[in-house]
Length: 94
Image (cartoon, rainbow, N blue to C red):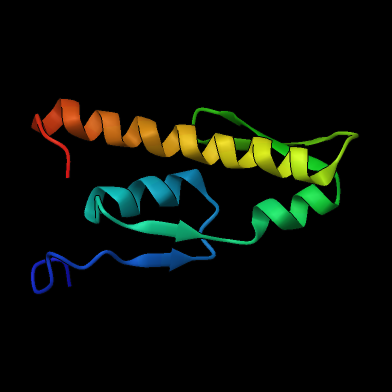
């Protein structure tokens, strides 16, 4: 698919594993991710924190939108690190 349609920017839904995100991002550097994990866990006052590519669950108190915002930041920082590694490796960004 990548070779036949190099300009395609695939959207992967339901991906919440950082390892899977990293694998897909290596194949499709321009891909996007969408999932409902952030909202689902935030409503249950569960925050995920990152240790490398592992996600650990923590029960917290507070507004679910704050919990969700934290979770989105975890994903955002992880994807930025992948993008930075790509630039370092290949000397350019897409």
